[in-house]
Amino acid sequence: MASIDRSKAAARWNRRYRLLAACGLIVLAGLAAWRTGLARRVDSNALWRVVHNLCVPDEASNHSPTPCVAVDLAKGYAVLRDERGATQVLVIPTAKVTGIEDPAVLKPDAPNYWQDAWDARQYVEQSAHRPIPRDDIGLAINSLYGRSQNQLHIHVDCLDPYAKRELDAALGRLGPAWVDRVHIRYRDYRALWIPEASLATTNLFRRAVEGDPAARRDMSRETLALLPETSPSGARGFVLLEDRASIGYEGHAENLLDHKCRFLTSNPYW
Image (cartoon, rainbow, N blue to C red):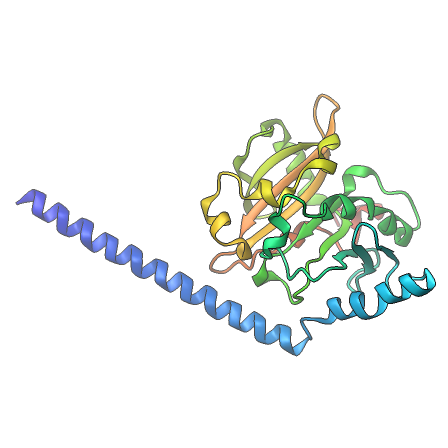
């Protein structure tokens, strides 16, 4: 009799779990529809048109990438100043790549947009009118649900000082294998240490799906941040942070950046 009761309880729990999972998918689908509608209102192809119709032709014809600040035709990316904040830039492929969910980013021969974005930090410094220490700049890409543009773009800007302080405290836990539940700015991320010399030869999108079947099935919910750090031993590298959009969270690792660049003030925690 007890065995039958346990079986009935298990069946009820499975039904409840499936119902909750279905509700979660419905909420995410509704969020996606809302975001898609919002994107249409703000022109979700604006970045693509600026890069494809203006920056690339201008660079090819006149060696002047206006309105972008840089276009590398050989490597296939453009750098555009973002209207939000005084220092933020976006690194954008010159090929049509919709976002983090685009299968092109996982190809073995995919361009290394993260290395390109790291190289583009010089334009953040230009806007700041001063050098910025290496470990105070961050890179981030949002999920499908946390963006308004349907062209891949990596945000490059100052790192949020609170995020940096929390990342510094967690650094001793990190290594070449993924570590779960690294708490940075109200979220628990998976985190991975990337040696500085490895960035040029590592596809970070492919690393993000390692050991994560959910990410392999659906990259659209992924959000990534690449934050430069110096280990306790003095080795320079990066921390790759991975998280996923969920109910109540759009997948917005850009939150780890500080578009007010408070680091440049006398009191960055004010």
